[in-house]
Amino acid sequence: PDINFVGRFENLSADFNAVCARIGIDASLPHLNKTKHRDYRKFYDEQSQDFVSEAWADEIQKFGYEF
Image (cartoon, rainbow, N blue to C red; front, side, top):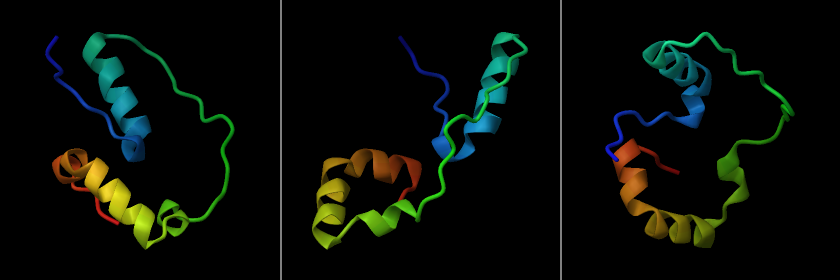
């Protein structure tokens, strides 16, 4: 099947609302189990950054992600 929308976690609420509007439903997305933690980049050392950068290079480039 063709994919016509890819939502991003960092835009989860807005993207969820856009999908609901597109398919014609009225729904809400509760935010459960919210945690406070450091920026995810702090969990990666240079070796793990290199591994992730290589393993997911296509997605990182396609979506404009960077460490």
